[in-house]
Image (tube, rainbow, N blue to C red):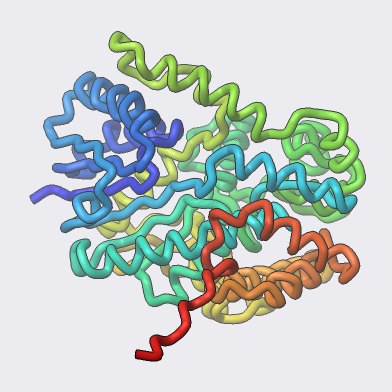
Length: 431
């Protein structure tokens, strides 16, 4: 019997990437039913239309369902893929621009913008997980692609959900390095360590040989351009920092760029408008090239690979977000880390890794502390915990900034934060 996969946020313009990944693996990933769930019918209908044509073109014989009914989507699901965006791109625009009023850079997954997104998102995802526990298959997996991935996955695991987090940063870099070395991707393995959107590559293994030292000596300029970081920094660290590290290592330059340019949210709004128009074309039966500009490159590969391996018990190695449990000695066991793990039917099994180098250890520990506070603030709707989270975050860390910025973020997101703005309870009856 085949699988049922429910995609929460199925109206995302990313969805054709995911559909392509499932279609390409249909002989190894027997999906009988694929459900796209989204409350926004104006987005869901064109996305589902293209998905159906793509699946027909691939010769898939399963059932595709597009719905706004969460119960229907979750009923009997073997895998629940979460890729939602609470508040849409409009909320993202606030995340990326409001911090500028306080002299802080804006980004949707880290710093104050990432906190705002976490506060909006964590309660919604936990409600979905609670419903999945009632309606999905007994051993169902939640695969979380929703940003901030580390924080959302932390909340899911802390709630007892059977979940793994997924990001496309590692697979994207692996594919670029494979192309650089002119080898097949499966011949390249990365020692990818850290937290989601705060990672470093400490080794680049090609057929068992670490090519990173030579790469840094001979091709640091190319790597630096790819990561948007100074080549001298890469040579100094003897690692490849994720391009998200530029928000920490080059924060002044990034802030200056943001103050004098368009936000990424504005760019994505334009791209999504054009994509949805393309998706409405009844002759289109494959993902358009424009989708590459949306971001999420190799998302289909990462998501489909993970689900296929969880189903088949392949025992291959993939980079996922999971509980640390001692894998990185410098971080708490209950921290959610992004590292290589062996994937089988029982889940992800992390490999033991060497301690973090002194120059990255403190940053990882500080961001981990912020994430812990952010989860608690989101769950409890606690303003004080939100302030403490920004005090712990290296991009803020100042009370005179953290306190008013939290108030501004909460007010800007008021309609998406019911736990922070609970209505006063009615007075008890005197009758």
